[in-house]
Length: 605
Image (cartoon, rainbow, N blue to C red; front, side, top):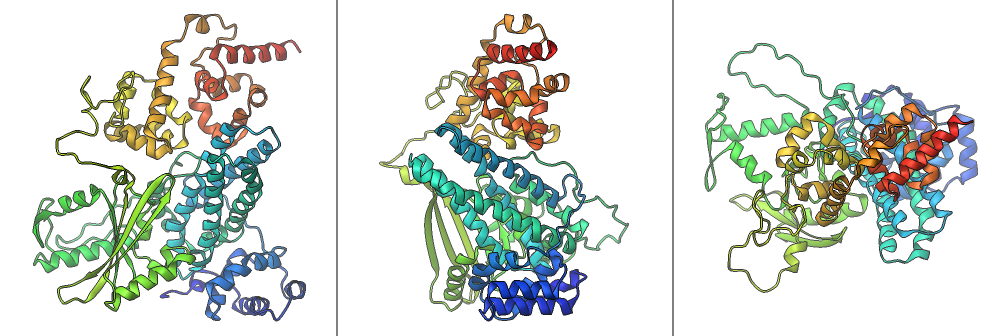
C-alpha cells in the first residue's frame, strides 16, 4: 500500500509494538484469555481507538490471514475494552461521522421498540413495519463501505474493508433471514431469531463508535470529510432526513493563463480528469480549450462527451470497469442501479470493494482472465424479490492483451416472466396527460407508474407534506431546491423504489390520502373547543400542550416515534392529525376527541 497509516496519526510506536506482540501471542494461542488480560493491565493504563486500530493494521504485517483476524476480533476487543478511551467530538450537522452517529441513535431506539414489542401479543403487521425500518440499516452499511472505507484505504488503513465488511454482512444476513421467516409466517423461528439480529446490529454499531469513527476523525481532514458529502447524498440515509450543510467549500479560482489545465475536486475526480485529458490527447486535441459540443472520433461513430455520458446514464444495465491493475476506474450512474455506488469507489483496489468471503472468487475470475484461460463468468441471485443477473467479461486490446474486467449487472425479474411473443407496438405505460387509453392504470385518480410527482402535488398540494410520513426518504420533497428538480422528472415508479414500496402500494397510499381529504366533513374543523382540525400539525399542538407528546404513545405504540428526537424533529413540522390518525388506525374525529379529553383532564387538575 502506498501510504502508511501512521503518517496520519500521532502515536507511540513502541507502545504499538508491545500491544501488537500481546495480540499476536493471544491469536497464536500462546497465552489464554485471562493471562492476556493481565498482561494488558500490566503494560497499559489507557489506549486510544486510533492506537488500537493501528495495532490491528500491524497484525496484517505479521502474516495472519483475514479469516483468523476476523474470528478473533470480538475476543481482542473484549481484552482491551477496559482501557480503550471513549472519545467524543462536537461535530456539526452534515459532518459524515455525525450523520453515522445520528443513524445509530435512531436504530438503537428502533431495537428498543422491537424488544418491547417482543413482550406483547404477536401482531404481524407491526413486525412488518419494524422490519421495513430496520432493513434501511443496509443504507448505513453501504454508505460506510463505499465512502468511509475507501477514504481510509487511501491513507493506509484497510482493516475496515477487509474485516469489518464481514461483520456488516452478518448483520445484513440476519435481518434478511428474519424478514424471510416473517413473510413465511414461521413465527416461532422468527421470534427466536430476534436476539441474534439485535446482538449483531448493536455490536456493529459499538465497533463503529468505539474504534472506527474516532480513528477516522484522527486520519481524515475536514476538507476530505466535506468532499465525501455529495457521495453520501447519492447513496442516501437510514431513517433520518438528509442533513444540512458541511458541503465542500467553494474557493475562488485565481486567474491563470488560457491553456492551463484546472483539476478540481477530490483525488478521484482528478484521476478521472487526467484520464479524460489523455483520451483527448490521443485524438490530437492536446490541452486546447474543449468546446462543450466538440465531437470525438470514437471507435464506431462520432459523439460529444455529453452524448457519451448520456448514453451511459440511460443504459438499461449497470456497468463497472476494473483496469488491469485491479483498480476500479468507472461505473455507470443509472437511476435503476441494482446496488448502491458512489464516487468514492473510483480508484479503489477491487479487493477492497467486496466482502472478505467474496474476494477469493473475484481474484479467481481476474486471474483466469489475465492468463487467457476464460473470457466470461456469469452469476445470478435473488434478493428482495428481484432476480439479478451478473456477468464479468475480460477486456482485451487489439493484440489480445488483458486490459481489465467489465462487470454488467441487470434486474431481469420482468424479462424472466415474459412468454409468447410481442410483434405489435404497445407502450408499457400511457402518456402523462392521456386519459382513457388502453394500457392506462385503472386508478380512480388516473395515477400510474409514469405519473410525475410534481403533477400530482400541483393537483393535490397536501400530498407534498403527506409523503414524508410514509418514508424518511420523501422529506426531500420539502427541500425547495430538490423539489424543483424532482417535481419535473420523478415518476411514481422512481419514488416507490426510493421508499421501498411497490408502485401499486404507493399509489394505494396516495389515493387513500386523497379520499380522506375529499371525505372531510366541515364539523371536524368547526366544533373543536381547542381549534384542532385534521390539518393541525402535531408539533404545534405539542408546543402548546407539551404533555401530549408523552400521552400519544399511550394511544398506540406507533406513536413511540414521537419520543425519538430525530424522528420527532421530522414529524413535528409536517405530520397533521389526519396523517397521525391514519398511522395509528384512528378516525380523525376520534383522535381529536382523545387529545381534547387529555387537555381537559390536565386543565381540571
